[in-house]
Length: 86
Image (tube, rainbow, N blue to C red; front, side):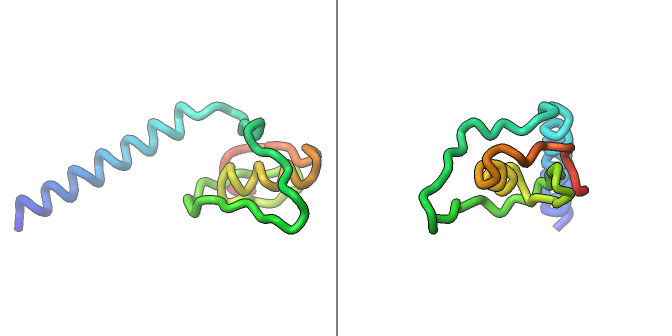
């Protein structure tokens, strides 16, 4: 039981450290160049990871996929403000 608890705590510590390192190394912009406009009536499938992005419209987008989808829908009028909630 103690061994299992130790391993779980170690995994949690390493996961937290990895996440913090990724957040520190992220650039200060979001690259939406790979997102193309979809035909009318089609919706983009985005992953469910929550990594909030604040847009120039004051709306918090759940992650870069959701944000970039909206950027393309607005013909690049929507701009990146900062990572995190608005």
